[in-house]
Structures are given as structure tokens and as C-alpha cells.
Length: 59
Length: 219
Length: 241
Picture 1 (tube, helix red, strand yellow):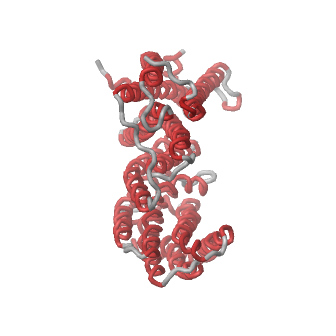
Picture 2: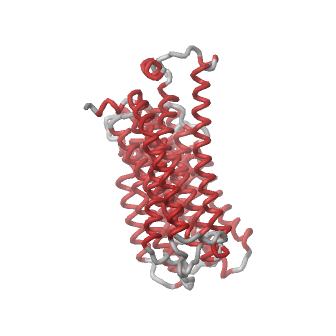
Picture 3: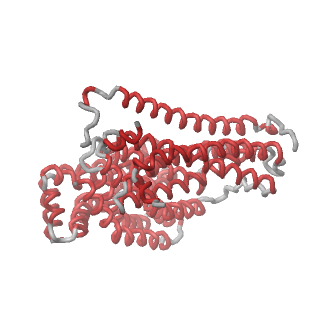
């Protein structure tokens, strides 16, 4: 095992930039998913009055 | 049936000549914009001419596709056509053929003039016309799939572009490539063969996909 | 055991919920292991120094982008052919993750290109094909989001996905052709690093990690989609209350 050169031989910006971007992409995906879940929980709890009753079987 | 559909669409397009003509003018204007944006240097224009003419043809096709099924859909004719005993494949084929005749054929006729503007030689102009004759049917056919999928949706014209332009890319590559080969003196034959292959594939499969998409959209 | 009952969204919902941790946790672990092997064990490359380490995220992202498109088309086709709602929901769920990975592979490819080729973007066959793949994903997602009726959206998406998947080899070939014709005097400076054992291992582990991650995320999203679409069906409400 060898400790990596943190500056990546001068290419640090590119290497760490890519991994940061990957991390952001993954975080974005998970955050939008949790947002979707939260808004759906809210929907279940208090469905919009405009759409009428909650248990209509016709969509 | 096929002849009837083509004839009907041609008559309807004739009554609205402005639509087809506006597509043609769009083509001319877009092609003319490029020298204005890039500069009048002849060598440069000659090298970008194939790409510019072809991209403008793609964009002009996109405009005319919105009209392919929309009018019939709005007045209910499309539903009637879907219910005829004749195969929907033929109906689609007929409509696409009429669209090609009204929208693409004028482009093909005017493309040589635009090619002269860009300083192309006669030999190259011939190749340009051939590639357009081979390639524009594919544009109409693949475009008809997009038009059928987006029938009746909001902002369908932009959506058609997003759906169909990536699928146009092989046609663009081989079509523009053939003209470029002719410009630098190589034989365009290999490009033309590949372009013809695309045309044949599109002729066989695209109307089927469009028919399926029509049934999905009209239900 | 009757597996077909899981074709129903109502029955699949709890099953997916149980499966997700089995993919999410190994994904996180493998990400850690892969990055460890990639950074601590794999040596610097002879030609590219340490810059090649971007490969450990770029290559898996690119492969997954392509693989997920094909998978999406298969699910969409099954949903259309067998009128199976759940398959279409899976296709819609996969589309977003696939687009994300394709976009990621473009960005990491650009980051890899700058130190090695000198420019952020090069119109070579692979990058161009990946860009077109992203356009295909965007088309699919746009089409589905513009159609209000979910069943029409499913079927229209299926037609588009199938037309797209048939076109992918044609597009790839034509872009290759276009690229080799226009190569001219430009020399390909980027060569794949001569694969050292540990590099290959790191890449494969990262590939497995990304794949496991995709499965987990797709299942989470499909659960959201199931709720959004089935929430008015009485049996679903009863089953998940």
C-alpha cells in the first residue's frame, strides 16, 4: 500500500474535480429522491382539496 | 388507398401553400445566416457548405413535421383513418410521401442554388442533390415517428426536435460526408451506399413504428 | 412460489422495500473498497501519472449509461408488449439514473481530457456517441414528462426507447466513421493506460459498486412512482397503510 500523492502529480484539480462532481451527482439524485418521498408523504397525509376525495378509483 | 391519401394530402397542402413555402424560406434563410455569422471567405464557406446545407435541411424538416398529423388529428380525420380496414402502414406511408413531396422536394430543388452561393463545383452540386434525394425521405420517415408520438401535446414542435434530431445524426453524417468527399476529390460512393442503406431501413421500418405510435397517441 | 404476483405494483412495493438495503449497503462498501484500491494500491501510470485515476469513475459511468439505456428499452418493451404497468414504471425510473451516469461520464471524460489531450472537449467517437446517448435519454424523459396520461406516456416512451435502441448501433457506427474520416493529422495522445492488475481490479470493483448503486436508486425511485400512480387504488392504500 502506498500513500497517494494528494496533488496527483499536478493533476489534482482534474482528479478531485471529477470525483467531487460524481459525489455531487450522487447526492443530487438521492436528495431529489428524498424530496419526492417527502412530497408524496405530504400528499398522503393531506391530499389537495382541488382533486376531490382521496380514494377515487378512477385516475 | 395509397394514391388517394397522397392526392388528398397534396390538395390540402396546396390549399395552404404558405406552410410549405415558409419551410422553404426558412431553409434559405438559415443557410444564408452562416456566411453572415462566419465571414465571406470562399475557402471557409466551401468547407462548411455540406454541413450547413444538411443541418438547415434537418431543421426545415423539423418545422414541417408538426403539420403532418396535427390537422387531421384536430378535425377527427385521423381517427377515421385509423379505423379503415386498410393497413395503417399504407396510410402512414401515403402521408409521409405527400409530406416529402410538399416539404422536402422544394428543398432539393433549391439546394443547388444555395450550393452555388457557397462556391461548390458542378460535380459537388450533383452529389449534393443525390444525397438530399436519398436522405430527405429518411428525414420524413423518422420524423413521422416523432410527430406521431407527440400528437396533441403542448409544445409538441420543440419536443419533436428533441426526440428526432439525435436519430437524424447518421443521415447527417453520411449525407454531409458524401458532399465533403466530393469537395476534396474523393469518391462519395461509400457514403451514398450507406445513406441508401439507411433509406431502405427507414422505408421498411419507420411507417410501422409510426403506425404503432399513432395508435398509442389517438386512443 | 408464485413469482408472477410481484408483477403487480402493489405486491412489488414491499418487496422492493426489503431488497433495497441489500443493494445500497454493499454499494457503499464497494465504493469505499474500490476507491481504496484505486488510490492507495494502484500505482501511477507510466504515461499519465496520477491523472488516469479519473478512469475509476469515468469508465463505470460510461458503461452504466449504455447498459441502463438498453435495460430501459427492454423494460419499456416488456411493459408495452405485455401491458405490464410495473415494467413501464421501471423504465421510467431507470431513465433518470441512466441519464445521470451518462452526463457524469461526459463531465469526467472532459476532466480527463484536459490534462491528457489539452482540451476540455474533443469530438472523438466515444465522447460524441456518449453525448448523443444523453440526447436520447433526454428525449425519452421529455416525452414522458409531457404526456399527462400515464399509460400513453408508458407506451409512447416504449416506442421511442425501442427506436432509440435500434438506432444506437447505427449512430455509434456512423460516428466512428465520421471520426476516422476527419482524423487527419490529429494524433490520438490519449492511450488507455496499460492495465496493471490493481488498476483493473479497482475499475471492476467501482463498476460493481455503481451497478449496485443503480439498482438501489432505481428501486427507490420506482417505489415513489408506484405510490404516485397507484395512490388512488384502494387495495394499494390498504396494503401500504
